[in-house]
Length: 254
Ligand code: ATP
Ligand code: MG
Image (tube, rainbow, N blue to C red; front, side, top):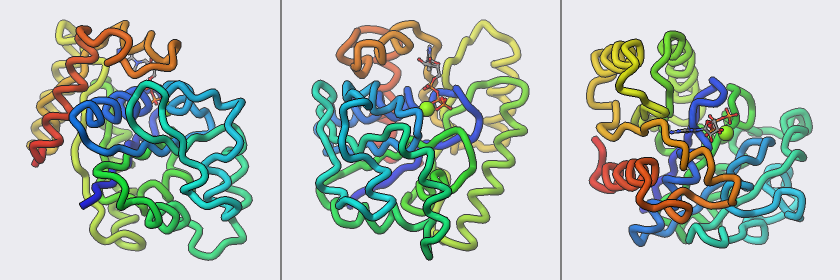
């Protein structure tokens, strides 16, 4: 059965896109059929997958607007061995333009039904906001993955996100669950990071992935080459960490 994961956190710059691209590549490297949906007008997942956002004709925007069928929008990542529904700046207008649609929160969910059977995993890279785009991601998903940096304000933001997930569960998607919390850009020498990490485990227990993503310069460099880190420097700590995360997910994290 296809598993649809929304990778979300309304806080910016916590590693959502890095996780989306590199988990997609790592799952694909294990032989899984993977689709990555870029649901952010910044289109970082598109560029990081080696697709030029300026050159794509059809994007997730056209899908949400009902102007194009999703199977004609998907492209394959040249190196990543996974498929992509690309985005570009057009998507920034989607929220306003969708106002007139009924059930506008379910547009992505309905669109994905046409191709979900082609994949084992569908990952959705959400924008850093709790807006209509993220809501579309949460309605389409079976579960949520929350990347987070172990910083002072991280836990505060997390309770807003958990409340949003509860509201989505009550109104739109009764089976939505938190798949896991992922510690990103982790520096074990940082005492505050250790403390926040401990609190996180105390609070969320088994929901915290055992795999920790370290701060690693290779992960930051790879998007500049349009490559998942696995094909930029497969031996790097970053590449190994995302392979480990894929293994943990394949083993059925919880
Ligand atoms: P946004 O909220 O803007 O969409 P995001 O949550 O998707 O951001 P990323 O774009 O993945 O976050 O990461 C933010 C920045 O941190 C990027 O420059 C990325 O290359 C870098 N980065 C992410 N993870 C790591 C890591 N483990 N080690 C080093 N740099 C990282
Ligand atoms: Mg991002």
